[in-house]
Length: 320
Image (cartoon, rainbow, N blue to C red; front, top):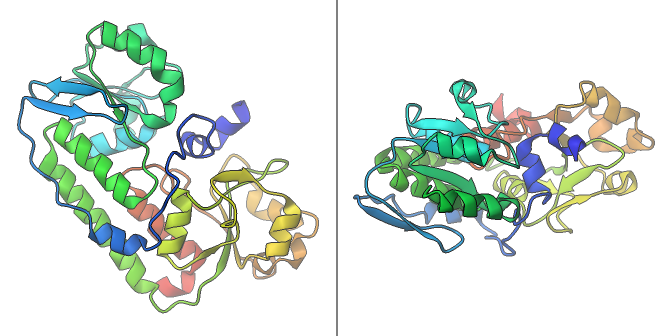
């Protein structure tokens, strides 16, 4: 288990080591058109009643003045909405923005219930990906009259926009949420415009090192991002995040290898030394690149920047 924490909380969640990470079975085959269909954010009025992904209703009499976030993606959204002063507690792994370091840490996958209650939050934002391990904690918090809102796992940009809209409504920051979504859409459209004439490349995305190499298949957020930038995922014939053999990678012969972890300092020089990898086009052309794991996996405002980073890594010539 400790090994997986090294590759980062977001990838840990994405590989399904926490429950419900890949609860959606269907995907839109046209991510760009899916984004265009996103509705505008509606202004919220208080008292406000909202239903979370578990079907639980919570009622807020006023915008919360004390907020706790239990997952980095929610934390990034909340800071992006301008709620620095209201955030009083965050996940141990929250590392962005820098201000998150100044907040009280309340746990990672297991949480300090007494500490959370002592912080007197008006609302605690939990996440569907950890619902199996959080069930008991949520019951304890609710027994102490702490409101808990469980945010749905997002499998694509459109669902991320919905999350932003929900957090904006719950905190009285609907207009800020709308601006955040608009900025993300503008960025993704700019990236896609640069790639409209590129020739598709075969890509292998590696999320952990040997001996257990993991990669995202279809029905993952990474698959949607690759689709958006006209890149062919060599692992798209299998669903979700799975362990792949070196022989399979060699046989698929990717044009580009994208590494999303940084716990192996010399990984970009180590990969070409793997047995048989010298025959891979990506290795021959020195097309092994590393991207920021959190920017390309956390379901928050930096995803659009992550899409740009991924696009630049695969198609550097389009951004020259």
